[in-house]
Length: 245
Image 1 (cartoon, rainbow, N blue to C red):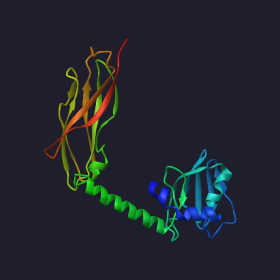
Image 2: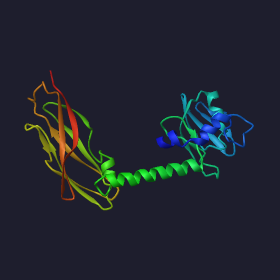
Image 3: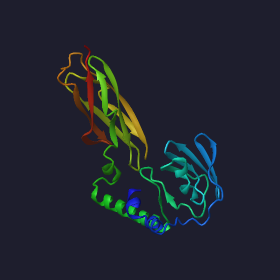
Image 4: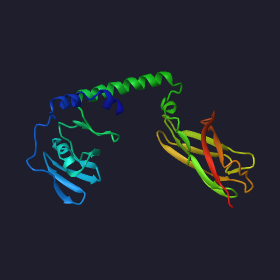
């Protein structure tokens, strides 16, 4: 979506230059306030504005005339547009979630599609793994929480979360790599993740009461084997340790 915002907004640029929005129909009435944060515009379809301070969610878009009215109720940014049904002229606006919505058209969307397909071919050629998403998402296996808060002399739960990009189920085994005086239960975990799915499995980490106060933060990792193939310590996290007075 960022690529479309940076290079695929010819329609938006032309609209800005001419002062025209491309809207052929404009409703005669303005926004009607239904309750404190909900407004209605009777357009080519009913358009609802759900307002939260200076931001809003639009339910349907109509002709797009609603954009000219949002400033009047103090809205500066539209976070998303929920389409409850389809019109032939939609989509004419893209709401990326980060940044302001921008006008678009079929040509822009086709350019974006071709750009994404080109990127996919490139990444597939440079990532060694045949399922290149494993190379693009370095957090396909991760510890949660990444920053574990724990007390010396106590135990704390820690999860290993895994996403499977394979076209077949994945069997994964893992063991935490900890300081020699620490313990993990179980020592080794195993999990089966379905095709395209996610899974998680838990550890309990036990920190000795006499742990050195000069080391309040400790790095840890997980040694991982997937489908019988050793991948190494590809997962990492940190533990912040609280000491009693």
